Image 1: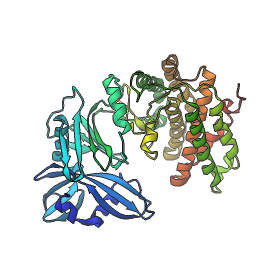
Image 2: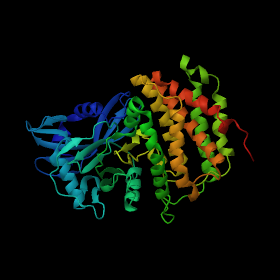
Image 3: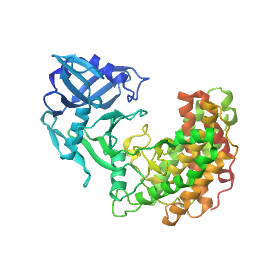
Image 4: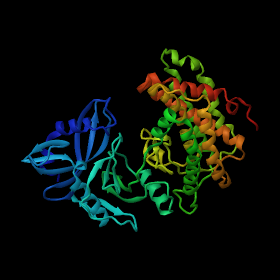
Length: 470
């Protein structure tokens, strides 16, 4: 049974709270209703802790499922992140309450299982073997810049990350962090625990607990600052970033006995699906290009772009497919002052969870990072008016690949030979640039020149203009 105060605050209060959340991913769509589907109680009394799973409905008839960790106290005791009041009780965002966040950690430490008899379901909370989780209470602070989920730092020791929008299945971040942590990979925030829902509604990962890694800034901020003050500073660390990326891929490909992680030879079917999906994305992007001066360099070149991307089906052996990061760019790495830390292994949030868990070429991650170098160079000029050395992007690419390729090439994950690797990498960069084109047209038209320049450069590159050898 849903706790009475939560049931009585009504749909309007819930809809208003969800719509205001920075983590709510459908702000351009009209919410027509919010319904609580399950609300298992993790802590009775005051403050109470409830994990509400709510269905958000839209005018189109579609819906999404969100997690709302909610606290309950007597009215007047709490005034942050309030959802509503009923029966003399205030209902609020529990992730703002240090006591309730610490309670979640305590339940993980104890390996608790909370039954939800009404839904024939349960919440499983677990700690990683060997992870020493103190009982708290922990002082907390919000992580800050995160958009799609909510992360809270506990005592500068741990980070609790709650996934807001839920999909059925194991979140890839839990899978990948657990795999990397168990194998001692040092360049990630080690996994310390997690909690998940299992029942008739769905089986889904609700959140993870990680070690907190103090860092100077993320890679994007580090690169921007370097370009403004000393362009050589980032370039001096780009090779190490390539090494860390290669070591991450090597670790993810290291266990052939685990079906979820064993490297695989791409099948003809998977290759056909890849090329068909890419072809469809490009056709859609170029079919509706608006009349903008910034788009002139690619106007009428849709078929040329499609032909360039179809080269993946003629590029010869593609190497092996592995689990990989899936949304790799400068914002997904931290610079500690001495080394790089890789974060956020959820994959591209707009893609369905099964697709984010699929094995792909490791070069997709590489392509994402190389495109990020192009973005930061242009952003430096657009945002800060800082002139970028003409060869900076090319040197960043060379340094990164100079660190990456020697680590990964001996493992047989890449196509045979540097020329074939360069061709496949160009294909993935072009795919990424087309994705960027659609994003910028929808959200930041003033930045559309960045993917346009990338598309032109790749179409005119030797990798995509040279004839394909049989």
